[in-house]
Length: 245
Image 1: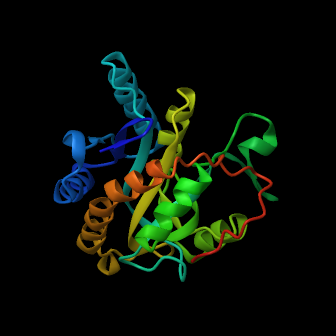
Image 2: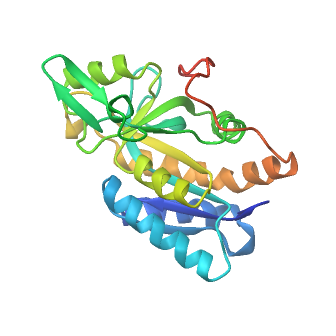
């Protein structure tokens, strides 16, 4: 699978997600041997390190990626992204990178120590969300999975329109940004963000949704390449609605 700019690199956290993505691409008969799909490990640090290694290896072999995709299962914010549905990131947010005091949480960007968000190409991310029938909004990267209603409510209040949380997207996006490669994040929802109830998780259903999504993705990217999408990434001051679709 390739874009007009080059081949696609997909980063998942674990092998089960990698296999689900690969199965979708194979079912689609992705041209050119398909995308490279790599299981990078759990969490933003592992994802950033493995993504950078994979990108530099590809560049060194003359196969610079034209697009990097962080993909996997994750939690969905109700009612925007119910279990079994898909979510595509409008923004990729480091939701717990900053400082917490008795007065609340301050993001790292407000502290003046760096950025806490990445902005996928607006036209491409919106087109992918529309084609997949996915919720479209901020996808939050967390180092600790949300397990209480209070934490879920806090995140939703701080990030209006948030559709999902995962543990790798910001790390992948940070690595891709160092090489100037655009990034997307696609999540299949296995559980609701909130009180931790493993009995309610639907991992198999989410993996099946991930396979279905990547079965459609090659065709979506080919259409977008034919349109020669030149949209710029969303900027922090953009006022476009970020709620669920």
